[in-house]
Length: 117
Image 1: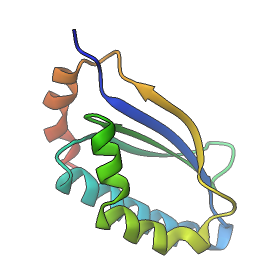
Image 2: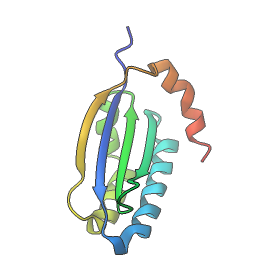
Image 3: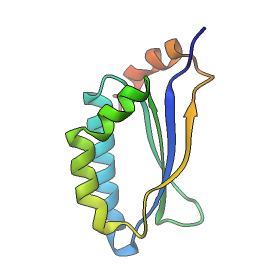
Image 4: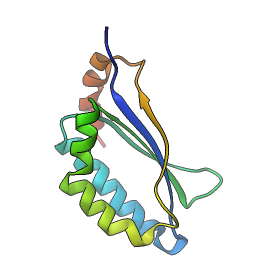
């Protein structure tokens, strides 16, 4: 039985004057993480359609150890240090999740597509 992968859904609000700088730093971080962290299988950034300064992050990792490795990675620490003053409030953890579909094998087979941004 596949135990699924570990996921997280987060939201951040950004000060309007820092929106573009936040986006640049966040997209660079996402690309770095997807290409450098082998245990990351999804890393998506979405913007709220009603509030252009609210962003959502959806991330999928192999397991909780990979989540911890990510939070301790240079890419994550650099991103957090860069955007900390741009945020309007704290990072909001909406949910920690376990995947049901796709399966672990499905996420593994999708990973190469993430590198085609």
